[in-house]
Image (cartoon, rainbow, N blue to C red; front, top):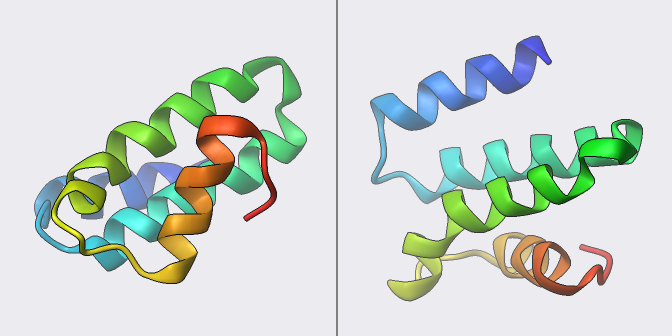
Length: 76
C-alpha cells in the first residue's frame, strides 16, 4: 500500500499527466487481486482517476483496458 500512497501523491501533484494516472490505476488493479473484500472500491478508484483522461481521449491501450476492467470485470 506504500506504493499506492506514493502514486496517489504523484498524481495529485501532476493531475494532467495520464501516465501517472495510469500507474495509479494499475496499482489499484494489483491491489484488487490481493484485497478482494475491497475490490469494488479499487474498481471505483480506477474509474475516478482515469475518467477525465478517457473523456479527453488521452488514454493509452493499457488505460483503456484498465477502464474496461473497472467497469465490467474484463481482464486488462
